[in-house]
Length: 209
Image (cartoon, rainbow, N blue to C red; front, top):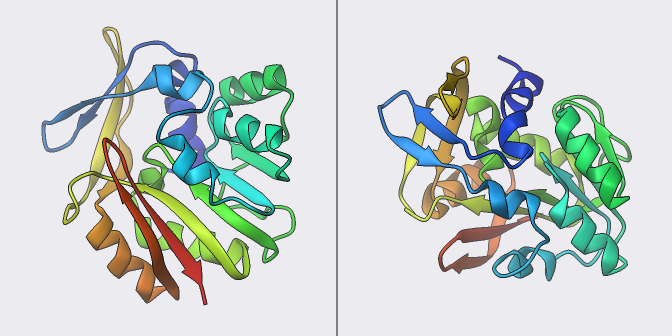
């Protein structure tokens, strides 16, 4: 299953319709669709404050982080395959391209920061591959800012189905990773952990050497 197919499966959630993930291990996760569609704020600021130069938001969804960075005067580009995401970004008048995040992107190797927020480290079910992809987008000294699972030692891979009301989507490869496991994965692709945050949500800053 491609990253593009994964993003399309989330269209209803990106439109703000209450949705949940049904995981292949039987657990269910309620998606925070209101946070995705609202303006950035709260713990988002930890991510935003660390974006001082050109930033690309992979899986930008409705574009709240892209809009917040643009308001701060930070050059920023959102990337998402979803047409619903594109519609939201147009309404917010922010720069966004409909593209698979593993396909060629503008100015690869020159970005100052890559954002992987809202569980996007799970896209494709191969977090190590996604970290390597993010690292290739960066200029030397650039950072990948990742939202991790609050359970620091967790690493889970499997499939998920997006459920909206009675509708159940097709199984998609997915992953969930805590900060400790994320740090170990990052080191294997040349990214050093330079900052962490743990609150209601958890974030990690990974710097390309």
